[in-house]
Length: 299
Image: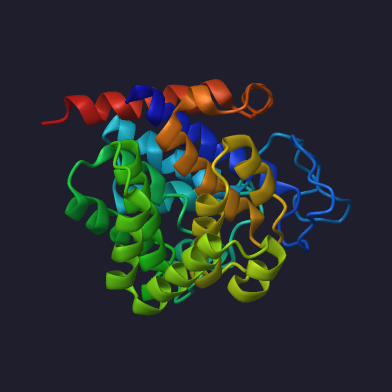
């Protein structure tokens, strides 16, 4: 299971880093470039090098580290996140995260009523470390409420957390379980995920699927598209590469795909060249190991 913990965090970071350069761009399936690339000049991520990740992984690792140390609290997370924001270290943050950090800095109520997928990254470590699904759901909702208060955003984060929770524990029906949970948390999200899965099973082209599902920043598009890709593409390298080319919210979409693939197949299934070129690989792996130790030793 340690290999799956490592694979999950590393896979998430790899997906994010692959999608970083194409975030907010149109889809491009004519040239599926393998490996990391630099964002085009003028892009908000233009200052990042190939293999560096965005705010999605930054916040995921912030929460994972605090959980591993046994120091996590919503107050502590909010304070650490706001420090990163004020110091200019948070990379091209989600609009809701940006607004929430400003609110915290100004002493105002933090959470923003946004249905963006900007808090799905922090759901991943909760899905790993908590053994009880009820605890996973409650902890994710509390954590995401620091930045997002919209019920759809919380439902999307819970869906991702439960997908990872069941995948890392070897449940072959993890996707189906997460799909059902999405419907319970938000019927509209559940319906969109079901439609995306149906399209994947029918064999519709990715271009056509995108016109139906969308690739935007809302959980109503980001999460269903990730489910479509996971159902459609079984090989890890191809899944990550394709997710990085879907355009729109590529970094978050690819992060979800990478977290799932790593949780199921482990670190050993991640492409060697992508591991070698990933920013902070050793630190991410060490955080995953500490998170696993926390999971196996807590009462």
